[in-house]
Amino acid sequence: MQNNKEWQAAYSVIEQLENAGFEAVVVGGAVRDTILGRPAHDVDVATIAMPEEVKSIFNNTVDVGIQHGTVLVIVPAGPVEVTTYRTDGEYTDHRRPEEVQFVRSLKEDLQRRDFTMNAIAMRRDGSFVDFYGGRQDIEAGIIRAVGDAQIRFTEDALRMLRAVRFSAQLGFEIESETLQAMRNKAADISWIAKERIKAELDKLWIGKAVFNGIRELEESSLGNYLNGNFQANYWYEFNAQDKLLGWAYFALLQGDHWREVLGSYRLSNKEMAFVKAVLEALKALKNGWTNMDYFLYAQQELEAACYFAELRQLDVQMPQQSIHEIQTKLPIRHKRELIVNGTDLIKWSGQKGGPWVKEALQAMLEAVVNGKLENDRQQIKNWIEHYYFKKE
Image (cartoon, rainbow, N blue to C red; front, top):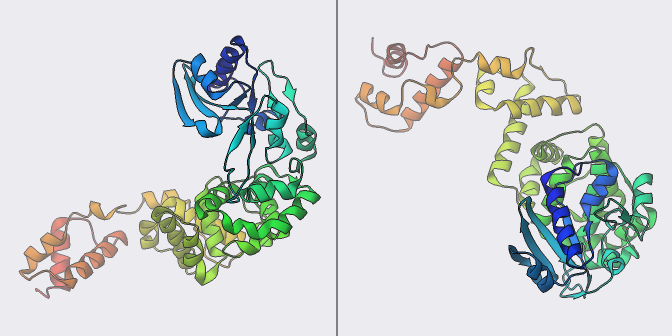
């Protein structure tokens, strides 16, 4: 787990800091994931060295957040974020401290973190520094705030949604006092930017226990302050590796208001297009898919629609073969494969262009896709002349 380049880079930085006389450790999610036996790719380092001292030790650094003590150190194995031990000043926007104070105590630095499982440090020799019972909570599958949960969530309201997301990712339960503090501070989630909320939901949708996370969202009352309906009972068997599938299923549960709800989370045009396609494909599935449905929708979109039909136990006509197999047997897969275009139609007709061209092209496309017309120039010309130009 610690043989990848990110870990090698972090250990290289720690070794150089130690050789210069400064304590340095790995902190954050990388330590938690190591204990859980999960791969970790963002391996951050915390150190007793001041930012200027860090910069003096390494030849290649970037001031990515030096006002908060963070310097990006670039070593042969890759870049590493190195942050000076610190305590946070006053939080005025429910998200970030106005200022930080650098300290010489690792214990004080870990005390400012959100949850005990994220407040564990790891030395280069593999030993752990755990002042707040993080390893015990990990073993028990518990998400517990460091210190006073009410203070932690008052400082940064996003931490509440992070607790829910971790519950979905890890299958952990939120500790009772932490959960109660979330209920007390749930309304503060309105201070958080929609983009930040979406980023947490992106990760929640692909957790191994999404039902767990949605249930905690309900029990914490956070769901009351987020757009859309979060109903845990509909997520009991949901499991996906792609966040888009989560957004599409969430949209399905919103009924006719899905565009308004998803739009509030600032989904991209591409993401919204995927959701729209899946919902349309699911609706079409009720009558059984035609060749045009297999032509219009991507394999991923059709597979998502089938998955949702199974989850909701809908009475639909499921495809009898694999979607990929059916799609590969279609006469054409893309409009650009049509051997005839609008210019050809105008030339053959001797007429000016107009709405009829689009209509004729669509009719021609459907005839080819449905196997009623070969994608052959002369045959299409004859077909168009007979059906549109009424030439005998």
